[in-house]
Amino acid sequence: MTRWLLPLAAAAAVACTSASPSTDGLRARVAPIPTALTTDAWSPTIRLRRDGNPASARLVLTIRKGAARRSFTPRSQRRGLYRVRVTFPSNGRWTWRLTAGKQALAHGAISVSASLRFELPYDLAILDDGA
Image (cartoon, rainbow, N blue to C red; front, side):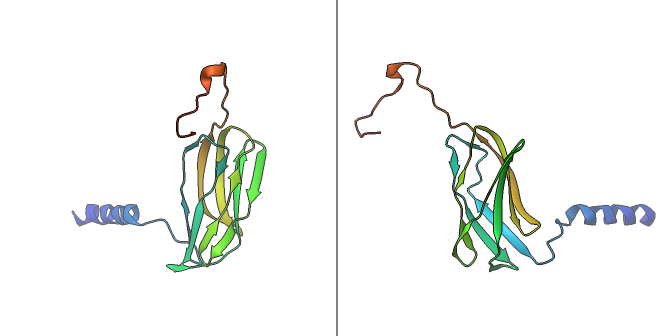
């Protein structure tokens, strides 16, 4: 019985172990992270921490769709808080990656569909409040 429990306990320990932290403890939180946009711009806030404390680093946010690739450098608002404005050059599914040096801190994908076409003159209406 103990012969079977030891491998089972080892497998459970491996399954419960979280992903190994980076060597320097640098973590980033990007918000908001939409899965789809109806505009060609995205302005996330990035909170950077090292071992639980606000941290500073040289960050690069890269977007990619096929061969198209653009990089953006977030601006520091204060220690540990960064802002960036990303403008997507075309519609489609874009992947993004936030890096500090060669270390990837966050990544994801966003579908962009910012084109609006008005086929008929009455497709556009103005509301009483000006919207």
